Amino acid sequence: MPHIETISVQGGYRPGNGEPRQLPIIQSTTFKYESSEQMARLFDLSEAGYFYTRLQNPTNDHAAAKICAMEGGAAAMLTSSGQAASFFALFNICSAGDHIVASSAIYGGTYNLIAVTMRRMGIGCTFVHPDADADEINAAFCSKTRAVFAESLANPAMVVLDFEKWADAAHAHGVPLIVDNTFPTPVNCRPFEFGADIVVHSTTKYMDGHATCVGGAIVDSGNFDWEQNPDMFRGLTLPDDSYHGVVYTRDFGKGAYITKAVAQLMRDLGSTPAPMNSFLLNTHLESLPLRMKRHCENAQAVAQYLSGHGQVTWVNYPGLPGNRYHALAQKYMPHGTCGVISFGVAGGREAAAKFMDSLKMCAIATHVADAKTCVLHPAGTTHRQMTDAQLEAAGVGPDLVRLSCGIENAQDIIEDIGQALGAV
Ligand SMILES: *Cc1c(COP(=O)(O)O)cnc(C)c1O
Image 1 (cartoon, protein in one colour):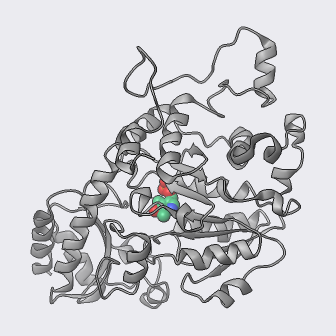
Image 2 (image 1 turned 180 degrees about the horizontal axis):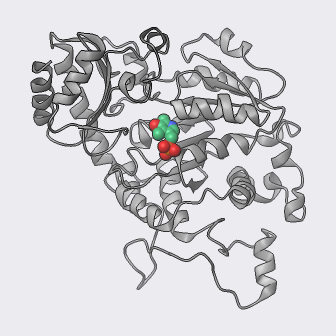
């Protein structure tokens, strides 16, 4: 097995003799055939091939194959956003009347997707704190539970998931563990090695890494045995009438879950990435291992600087030895976590705002995880409708600043932060 640095560069697209060295952008909605009979076989899924980009496109598939190899998976697909990836990953195995167990420390957009929108579709959810003990997690399940969802490194709480604990709970109830691995990326964490069954990504973050394309990915390990409890996953184990009786588990083996998601959800909901975006993603993936290393080095240096600064009341970064998740981070992400740090500025809301306004290089942006250092003050932006008391309850105090360390020179980031703290 090649190392991740090699897969990031060479994985996915493998040109043949005389073919383009770089992944071609197949900017075509449709594909030509000479026989209507072959076209019919494609529509029946009895033959593999491209016919319409809403379902599949070669540029998208090559980029997906690279991410699949990076995660050590069996099959993968891209989506037009991380939100679409999380929704497809769950909706592929849950329908009205079913239930999900989810970590409560997840990205706000995913929380809303599950707690509001999917609930409106009749899919219930019980949220459990990721640090809960096994009994509490087990108590969240019911006979209709079909999936468990958590983040490997939670955005923005920076909680590191206790993978084995969550995987054991999911498997004891016969359902897969789906892990959003956006923040550490497969460079720093490979959830399949710790019992996760399916991984989702917002490729918008470190994978793209340059703030150019919104996108998502779903990777299936191929390890979960859907036929162990065939009645729980009838969409995979019983004939699909919309494809003349195809049975995904029987006909596609380890590709069953992804084939179903493409054949049904992409067909009907169409959250397809543009081939141009997949080209950019594929190119940016080549430098992901280099970038993650630098993001982590910079964040470690900045976190240490902040920890020793008199105007900083607290720092949350799992790379710091005193951090609550330091031991779990060492276990599951020994080479580093990611570049995101949260910290408190002495003086609360006003001091945090003054600090942000005084930054010169670090940009104020509703974004994390790209090459350029950026900062966000949730109390003044994404959470501005909340009172200070509500903010404290949500774990996003009025003093909290979220800093996403880029890949610039660490000393330059620290100098900018230092002068801005000085101006408060
Ligand atoms: C940003 C993000 C998402 C949503 O992804 P989009 O590409 O913005 O749709 C999901 N999960 C995590 C952890 C994220 O950071």
